[in-house]
Structure formats: structure tokens, C-alpha cells
Image (cartoon, rainbow, N blue to C red; front, side):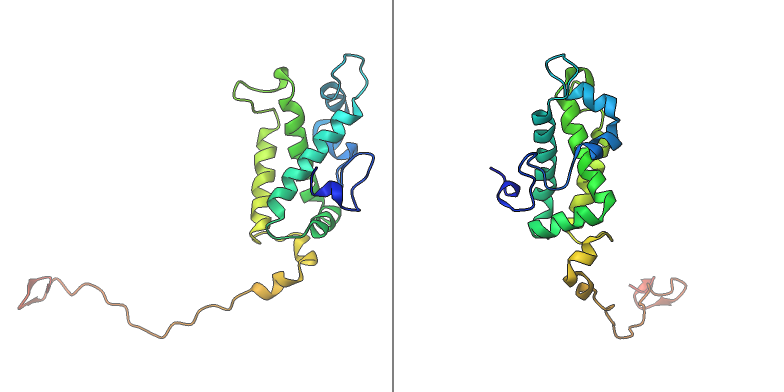
Length: 174
């Protein structure tokens, strides 16, 4: 049982907190989703399978973002920030294509692996507070973390001595 299934904002029918079919359709197209979420050959989408894939993508997102945000903040971010939501859909698209041998490569990567990697990088940066997203709206402490520049006392630069001077140390003054 995931952390999200225990929370009140998770849809009890789908098991998802923010993703729905339209998010994955936007990434892959509805025909591709229909094709990949159909295991019995009837042409009907297995909604349990699709909901499981979307919940798994949300859990992957949460596993990264829980380092910096609470579960409620994560859901608020996903509802406010369309890019972060589409990154979650990229993760779901990759999970969906990995299921079928026709759509995955020999190393187990699906056709949406590039989007999957970009999404993971985005969420990693968010968890370290290095992106400007809706997280700044939700996480009020973000603005207080700005540090003023460090003021160093004036110190002259010390370069190597003039090589034309032949003092007691010989050429170069060393």
C-alpha cells in the first residue's frame, strides 16, 4: 500500500491523486494509449491496468519529491504546475511502453525514455530547490533561503614575480 492510498485526496476509484487519462493522452495520443493498455486483444482499454500505471508514476514522483515537500504540497504543486504534471505523465508513458516488447528496446527502455529521464531530472532539481515552479508558491520557506553574497576583504592579487628581475633567488625570483 502506497503513501498516497492512505490520503484523502486520492481518487478511490483510480488510486491516483492527480493524473488521469487525458494527461497520458496528451503525451502519447489516445490511439497509442488504447493500444498499450489493452492486453486481451478486444480493443478495450484495461482501466485497472492504466490506473495502476498512473498510480505507479505518481508514486515515483512522490518518492523523489517527498525529500522536500509533504504529500499535500506535492498534490498542490501538480494541480498548479502543468509542466510538473506533464512530467508525471511522461513517467507513466514510459512505464506503459515498457510493458510491451514491441515498444521497448533490448535494454528494457521504452520509447518515452528521454521524457522519463527529463522528468526525473526535473523532480530531482525540485527536491533540491533549484527550479522555479509552483513549488515556490506552495513552499513558503523557499524565499527565505536566499543568501546574500559573501563579502571578502580586499586582498591584492599575488602574481609570480617579474621574471626579468634577477635578484638573489635567480631568474624568476624564487
